[in-house]
Length: 199
Image (tube, rainbow, N blue to C red):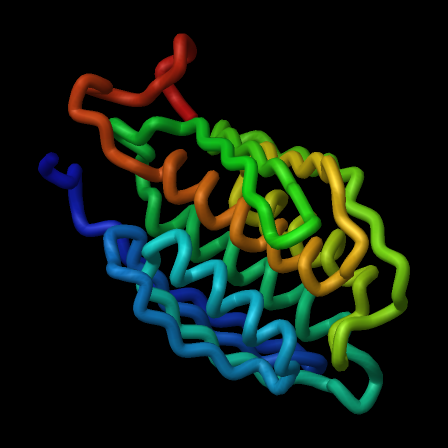
């Protein structure tokens, strides 16, 4: 299936708290390089890029001496902006995607609509304050930031799960598979998949 156009982007963000640079290729092969200074976050972003089959390079530095909040949230903002920029006019994309992903005892659903309208909903819940140096409260902050900067509806439903690592990893991988589906080009869609004529 022919691709509509080159769907790559680079986005940078620099504040007094963080310095972040992300490059993305939506039509990649899952080649990922990540360095955020937070091991578990690197693991999740690697899993995301690999399972979405996006080529992804993330370099992020921030005030980790305060805590992990600013770095993780700002990475979400930049990732969302990069996805939005790489999608361009969204011509011929499928727009919707969903995945139910198991990770041992955890089972998580993710659904995505690349509508241009931001909305985030989740019932993911955790029993511990952190996994490594990653605060579990930051799962919401990260995905909220992605959804609002990308302009997407993003929903998570948790059907089962006890181990926080498994739940979070299932969420990142489900998001990867859902957005991979939503960003796919379908040549039957001659413009954009909307009765309004725009996304």
